[in-house]
Amino acid sequence: MSTAIPLFRRSRPRSRTGWIGVDLGSQSLKLAQLEYQSGRMQIAAASIIPVPEGRFDESRADWLAKTLREKVTRRRGFQGRAAACALSMSVAECRSMNIPPGSSQERREMIALELAEVGAPPGAAGTAGSVAFDFWDAWPVPGDTNSNASVLSVSEDVTILVADALYRAGLDCSVLDGGPFPLSRSVDLVADEST
Image (cartoon, rainbow, N blue to C red; front, side, top):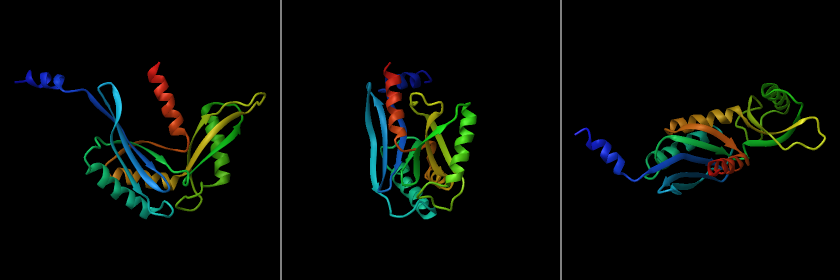
């Protein structure tokens, strides 16, 4: 009897789904999940839902959790709990900064100090407070001794509300991103896999 289980598993067609993509835009919530089947990537499940107007606050986070529970955990087509979320530029801010050379940690500290002076990005739920951010090296300007960095920042209040809403919806969000970066990184990932 125990030999029938491995035999059954080997005879199934190979299928692998990716993370559930959650794109929280200012006008719509877009959900998608790709599936690798028979050597090709295809859309396994997708949905587009209009987003209520207003700032991202607790009531919008409650709406997001409820909507995701209904559309993802109770809807056929979406599989698993792993998710990646992209935020609208209405709650995130992308900027370029010239940062003096240094280690990654030193540069992160310099960016944090500069962002603390500016305050939370527009569209934040609360008052100016802590800011969550990440940065990437940008193309250097010839002759410039500083290092250019692309910085994506979001009010920490918003990141907590979004992460909590995804958790309450039953999703494990490993990535919270925004701006033009997800597209450029996904192009890099595809290029890496094809070489």
